[in-house]
Image (cartoon, rainbow, N blue to C red; front, side):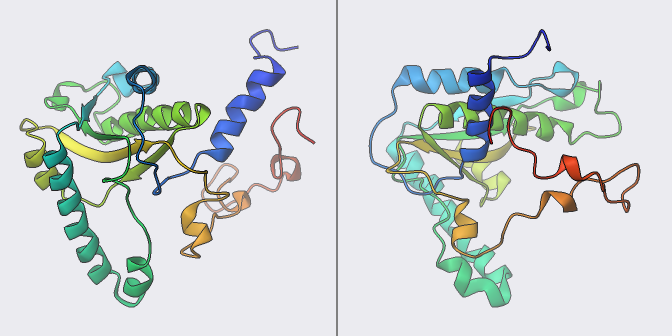
Length: 230
């Protein structure tokens, strides 16, 4: 028996949140309780970070005009993305890629300024600030899913433009727009799979032994299910 192990019910709840997390685009026009949003941000702030730098900042967008400005910019970038996709342009334009105007809460997540002062763990990989903030967003996402609230990560924007819209200081950098809100239902699988844009790769294609081109062949690793499930 592993003495630090959670209870069986707690373990299954963690795996369920991971498995049923979805990148949501469809929201109900209902408010989120401030205390609930606070719990999600607190979960995000408990994320691991390289060198304990905690580089994340969350901007809550409560001004309707500011929300509209963000939506306009995202739509501009959506059109540019469609143009860049060439043959897949029409397929892309049929996708719903954000819920900025309908979600209960809108947050802009950014990397703080003066990150160059943090060298621990970043001397050769300065991008670990982004990796750390991504962990924070995932914590937020999983906490929201556990409470039945949808989250959509929007990345279709020009960081420089969004930085100006949100009056962020020099040296900071926006990395995500989070749409947060109540949903009618969670997608049964990722929306881009439902829309046949792409599909999840088999886990056998991402696990290797000892070197990049040596696939793991231990069959017991694959097809594993959370503890307690059949």
